Amino acid sequence: MSRIKKENAFSRRDFVKKSLVATAGFTIIPSFTVSGLGHIAPSDKLNIAGIGVGGMGFSNLKKMETENIVGLCDVDWKYSDRVFKHYPKAKIYKDFRKMYDELGKSIDAVVVATADHTHAIISADAITMGKHVFLQKPLTHTVYESRLLTNLTNKYKVATSMGNQGASGEGVNLIAEWIANNEIGEVTSVEAFTDRPIWPQGQPIPGAMESPGTLDWDLFVGPAKMRPYNEIYTPWNWRGWWDFGTGALGDMACHILHPVFVGLELGYPISAQASSTMLLTDSAPNAEKVTLTFPKRMSKNNLNLPQVDVTWYDGGLQPNKPVGWPEGKDMNNSGGGVIFHGTKDTLICGCYGMDPWLLSGRIPSAPKFRRRIEVSHEQDWIRACKENAGSRIETASPFKEAGPFNEMVVMGVLAVRLQNLNKKLEWDGKNMKFTNINDNEFIKIIKEDNFKIHDGHPTFDQVWTEPVNANLFAEELIKHNYRNGWSLPDMPK
Image (cartoon, rainbow, N blue to C red; front, side, top):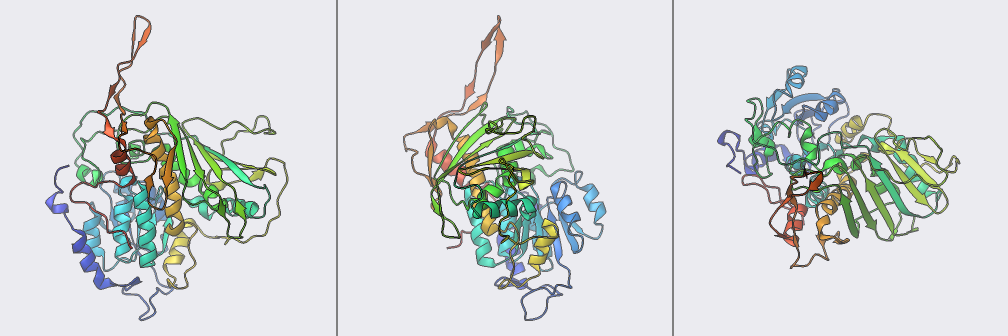
């Protein structure tokens, strides 16, 4: 990529150095802080900055208007114009680094709802400045980035939440409590699906276009490799492009698989395998099937939980309906669904963990041990921001949980992108590496399809990439090499 524009070039050293005046360990020192106590009085308001406000960021901010919205940042000022008008007192920016540099002393918290590939860098810098973070899903673009945000949060003790709002709903609570109460027995298989994508996927690389003057394309691309602008990328459609998004899986699994991760007390998977419609270099496939295998583990109640396979479908694919499924009942509930196959019963829920029910028709009566949240997902995070770190009640999706969970989600993306190795991939979660990709293995991916009908016969003239070392390719997917001028803080030891 070309160099960062001089007027946008703000180093981490610049804004972290200036913001350190406003931080001491993890204690935020805004003008309204109760002196010496290291927390914000509940009667006071947070100063919140929004980054990536044209889409979901605006939705989140509207649920935080009990607080002061003091800064707004978006690379596309046409897309965000209505947001700027809604908060006329907020200072507006295109570059989050400039905003941190100028407002670092006065803001307490940030809301991040940019494209997936910039989630980690924006949030990591905020955390190192001692700012609380509400971050849209998926938490990050890569496994390494998820691990980094988890560890940074543990170090700086800020209040965090991923924007998977179903985590604050009653469905997730009930699912976790039913499974813990052995209502469905041992679970060795889970199937989940979404009806996404509803944006373009399976696309060839588009041609170059001139970017509109209201969009800073250089800043949108950010840490990813530079490519020519095309209107197909943004706004919103970036989800279908590997450099910017994570496809239907990354977008929706953070909603749909959350009750699976929580209810079954999952950790790192031990293996992954995937298949899909045509896999292209730049755009996610139209439909995918991914299976992640998790090892035997011990529950919080010291129960032995068996090895379990979690299988994901998207692009219109669904699992087979289990024996006893009510005829005519649609499996899709608000964008997807989950089936927990237990030895005693089958548990089904919709997207966000909503509307859980048992296939047998029984209505469980299990002890309620999970915290119930009576406010919005966003307001619960605001509550956590105002509490002292030493006695804070965590949000429903704090990074210490959302980070490991998101590693599960982006592992599915890894499996899809490495499917041309044609084998089950074995994973060492602790060390973030595959253990069965050999140094002499190479991988190729289709660049152009070039399918034609010639005299009534299908003709395939696919153009493939040159073979690349599979280990090096996998390492880049696990931990991106950022473009010059962009970097993450070091991983805490």
